[in-house]
Length: 339
Image 1: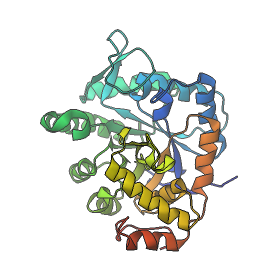
Image 2: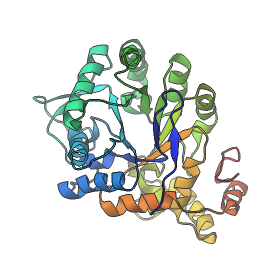
Image 3: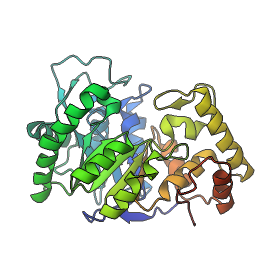
């Protein structure tokens, strides 16, 4: 079995496996999951040496956190590092609504709340769902244009900077939480928070991958400078870098456009010439940047988790990266494994 390397969040001292477990799919994101298989996926991750679990109240409106709690109660030994998010609170008596994108999950409505009180309530709810007495990493979730739109995003960012962030900063100072930061889908928002706060960690989804690297220009160099540990999510860009350019492939949670499909086909062609699966190359690329502490990958059953662990240990020849750069398929300034 692959032995996963460990890396450290420099500012907090938390040590985690370079491959983390991302729990978004366990909230019944695209399909209703078998409960036993979903919990077993988490158990498989922990048994395989993964020591970081990233989750959010949004994922299945609490269901993913419940499933993680069920898995943790089956395990003995050291508890993994748990990263969850604030910025939403769940309302048991509010209508669920259909805007979250989750096929299943719990029947609780979600309400945005970036206030200090909202942070405390969200964390208390997460502790209860997870069945633990401590959250290691707390991230302000979805405080971006992607979620709120261009008109409301500025107001939400200000709410987070004036309310949620100071509350997390106080909890960190008290030793209640080890690391704080944000979890978003936009590199520009990461840059803004890196400049305006003293955060320890960021979860950035989708904006640094084999398919696209907008975070490379400003945010990732700043993260290295300020010693901010970066967790990368969405390194398969919602699936297309795992499945390849197949019919129905998803990019940014939607069916991929023809230009995206064409670019992925070109990357696939290069990978095939070097006998490297696309998903292996995508994972290796994401792990190569010095700002990256861990890449969090989802899995909905034991087989998917074990395949991710195996992919994390696979070798990719340097010639593959050189060819991708020569073809203009990755940014020539992007760090690559072994280079």
